[in-house]
Length: 152
Image (cartoon, rainbow, N blue to C red):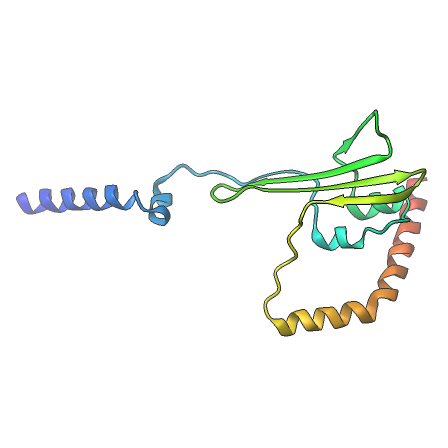
């Protein structure tokens, strides 16, 4: 009986002390979900934004802006928040300014580039990007024309 009691007491002591450490302590906490709010501001899409694009092209590429200001109709703000269950919060913000119907200025926070596994992968991606720039621009224009026809 004493052996069972001491075993239970030791087990409870180990669980209590282990909850003080960071990783093991997370096992015994309340589950929290990741909270994502706003537009998904992806680095690949932000890099495709160019001065001179039309409002329709920007909307096709980035989606409908989260914030459109009544007092500044020529400014579109794309805001993204990620509040993970544990860890650092992430905030991304891109502001697109228009003159008439064309992009005049793009302001963005420091958006981290996507993770690349190795330097060889980075080199291969860079070479592929240089080779296919013309093809991608043609596809974007074709997709944009189809999008404009569908919205009419």
